[in-house]
Image (cartoon, rainbow, N blue to C red; front, side, top):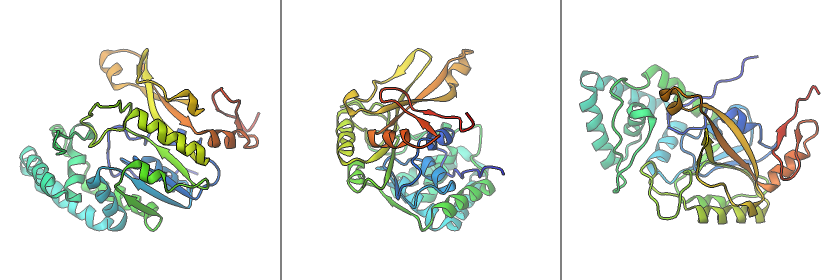
Length: 307
């Protein structure tokens, strides 16, 4: 039987879509609500929904226009798909001028259909914001964005899996974490290495390293099961420092393929992304019969059921 293909209507740079199957390997067998406090493209939530994992989902992002877009995709997919089609067709006479016009109007209105169009057309699907919080990424002039018929399939697919099971919010991630219980699961993909005081144009607000560590400590105290995608390395270059050892997290290294920069330079460097498991989750997985082997302080490994 062929695996179901997860829909992907929001082409966010840094999306965990390609890594989703590997990340889902470290999900527990049962949980009630899957919380994704830094949802972005919601790739992990969608992948979990496609697999039938969890009973319901909560996606959150401090980027309110993004969550307004997600709410529209989930609740009124036909409407947003038709709006996107109209914008896509209207751009054809002069794509660059039209893009600039829609970008200006989006920064004044925050309309979900405008945002979807911009995300489909901007360079590498990479959002950028200026100091005033305005979207300022340029268009990719080599392409016209996802074709309307393809976008419609992606939007309808996401709605199919998430509608009536998913709540959305646009609040600080710590407010979301306060809602969690030991029966739930949290997946977090925060802005990497949000060092205190530094601003990153990819995000409306950075996440301070010290504050994030404290939030994880509080989750540990409550016995919450969680996973965190946080840093990684390419070749000999590491991106940021690891999460604090005193959190007692289990580090899993995921192969993310050859980096685009290495490809351009003709090198063979590959990207390794880090996935951290909370103590309660790692312990649960360690006791799963014939599936996981785990010794505290070592990497958690997926066992071959045929051995």
